[in-house]
Length: 155
Image 1 (cartoon, rainbow, N blue to C red):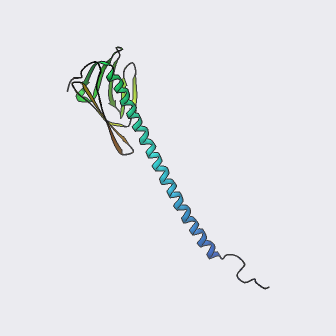
Image 2 (cartoon, rainbow, N blue to C red):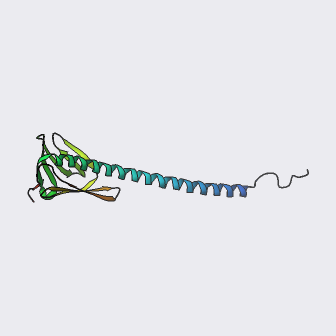
Image 3 (cartoon, rainbow, N blue to C red):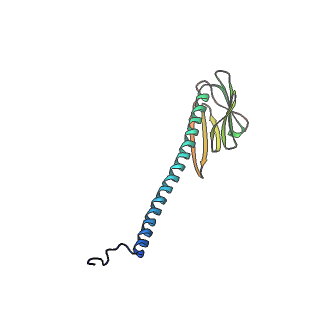
């Protein structure tokens, strides 16, 4: 029985310490993963909302540039225009969505917390406020109609 002293394996205390350290490392790694995953989801939601607002603003710009009549109504809450093709189009916000109401009522952006139109002679200023996961952002665009000057309607 030579050499049989402490070479028989690990003690229970050593195994418990090793398992405790491994669980701490694993918990730390999972925490980092979950934090990164949540940040990615928030970023993705914000980017999607911002893209929707930018594309909606682009669509409004196309309609404004080609409009033959533009009227800002309800103190800047609604934009009404007549396109060169004769289509009557309204842009407004309802239920946190931006709508384009032309041949059909279509929501073109969501998570909208504010919308304002203003006009000065040959310029339409659009201000769109959005909120996603408690984070607010604002997009302001100024668009010049090609054919006419802007008419301020009822205030």
